[in-house]
Image 1: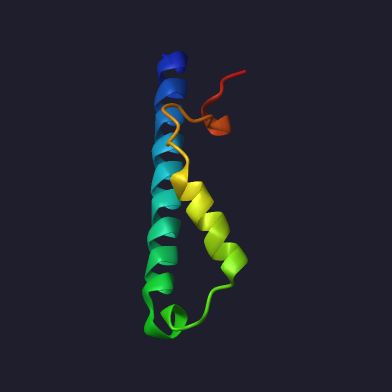
Image 2: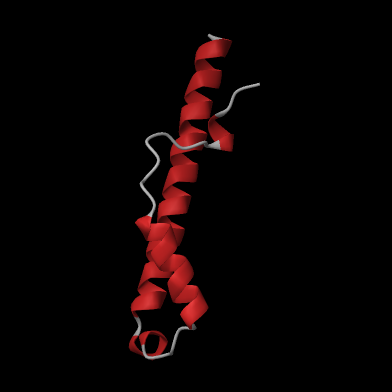
Length: 70
């Protein structure tokens, strides 16, 4: 029974972490969508870096340190 509790606890922690990450992403996107933020100029170097990032193919599998078990 102790192992089942540990598994459930780990699942809950991952879900909680996922929700927290998603909430932070939504907050950042809402902040970026504000007119006073959108009207600010962006440096060319930043735009070039973003374009280069978006031009790369998406990784099929990503490394997630929190999911690694020791």
